[in-house]
Image 1 (tube, rainbow, N blue to C red):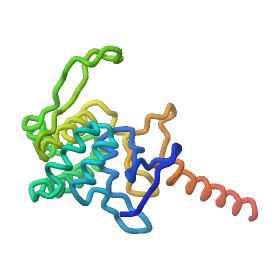
Image 2: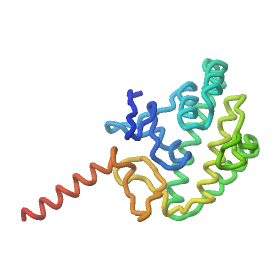
Image 3: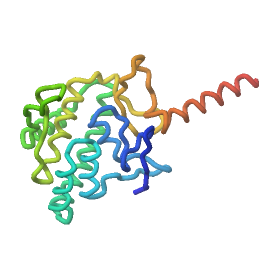
Image 4: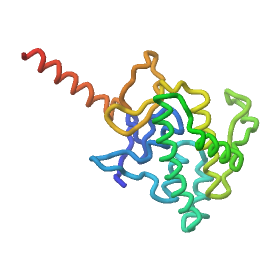
Length: 210
C-alpha cells in the first residue's frame, strides 16, 4: 500500500481518502486507482479497523481491542473479504442509482438483512452535545462492523438526492456534491480539480492561438 501522509489541506487522512461527504462514499473510495492501477486500502483486518477509527466510527480504545483480539484470526480475514465484496456491490448499485434513482431490490434486501442482524443503537449523548441523542454501535465481533456500513448506505439511498451523488469525471472516486451551485464534477481540487483546470486553460490557450 502506498505511504500517503495527510496534510491539513489534504484529502488523505492516515493513508485513507475522505472526500465523499458521506460515510458510504468514503468506504467506496477505499479502492482508488493510483498510477493507473487499483490499490486496495483495506487489505487486512488491522487496516479495516484503522479505517473505522479514522472515519470516527469507533473509538481508539475499541480499535485497539479489536486489533488485539482478532488480528490473527481467519474469521476476521473472512470479514475483510466480505466487506471488500460488499463495497463492490455498493459501487455497482450506486453507479446505477446515480443515473436512474433506482435501488436494486437485491441490495435493498441485503441492507435490511444486515441492519436486522447488526443494528445501530441509540443513547443519550453526554452533556454539552448539540443533540440529546446519538447513534452508536458496540463491535464485539468482526461482523459487527457491518452495522454502520449498512445503516449509512441505507441512509444515503433514503435521504440524499441521487443527482447530487456522482463519480468523478477523471477517476473512480465518488462524492456527494454539497456545494451551493451543485455543479461539482471532480472528486477534489487536490486530486482532479487542478487537472481539470489545467486542461481547460490549455484548451483556451489553443483556441486563442488559432
